[in-house]
Length: 457
Image 1 (cartoon, rainbow, N blue to C red):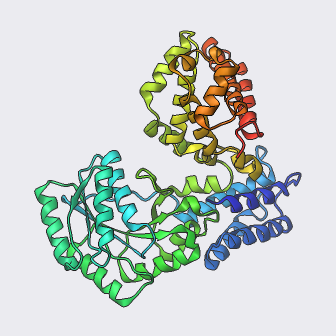
Image 2 (cartoon, rainbow, N blue to C red):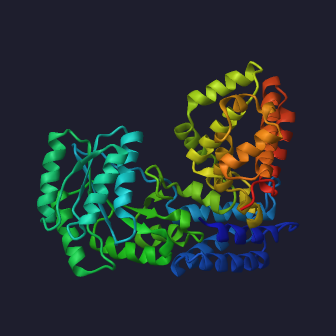
């Protein structure tokens, strides 16, 4: 998300290098570029106008501090205003109610509402330690009920059955009773979606809302629809007392217009963003972190939280102890590291959160991908246990056998072993305490990954 906007803004900042201060002339020139970048990102026009005006007021005539260049000074102003437009801080999910706390989900058909119900249920079970029940009041699409049943099993939460043709209010009443009997902390209610906003849909969800009196009413919207997402959210916000918005499919949205528009247009905070189909692909929305990612500053806080949550700490500890004792880093260890990377969302997700990665060319980014990581794992899987523990055994005939077993070429196996040797050197440097040598090795390894040293696509 935000790739095109990030590149535009980086180019604008680069043009300010060498200037002594931010003047009205160079700010006006820069703001013209920022305006175009925002419009191309499909940000709603009122948002663009308000953002540009606020940045200009704060930036024009501002003295550049000794520690900052004019470009950095502008970036600071833009970051602050982007954060303000998106809501300043993360708006916490409210569950302060007598159990079961009811969460009502609304949205158009195809926005990913049912999937989001399951993702939210998992989020609340794993991170908030809540006992969760889900129910579908979508009586017009029986497949939605079965879909939710399957997803509830996957994320290990309670499912209350319903059937097509039932009265949605009757389903809600039955689900509330079941949630109380099962001592559920939270009841998440999925509702019917339509292809567009219509009176019948609004009347039905208003009636459900009046009956359930939910503590959270979330509108689920597809980020890829751009500023249309903000307009649709506004239509719902006018009809229902929404407490927040969930943006889905953000991994397929290179522009990011919805994220920048929704809060300003609707007055409702974005509470979560969904990126991908996996049950764990739902994250709280942090405007300050998103603003930093837009401006190429990365999102180290989110990366650290993701590492703590998704990386197997026991395996990390074992590897650390192994390296410190001077034992050799082998191909089993390399495979574990690659699998941990995949579990965190892959290379693309990691690069998106690292500072400075926004400046990399698309050519370099395209060469650092998860397809290569999966191929590397496939090659290692085709080796015997002994070969993984002792990579020096892999002579020409063994490499040819491994290539055939993994559906690769011998040259691919050779490339993997070259990258293994780089990692093995890094680990030996780490074990001996040579941090400077380790950093040089890491730089070389990253160059190998990004500079065409990987598998052909």
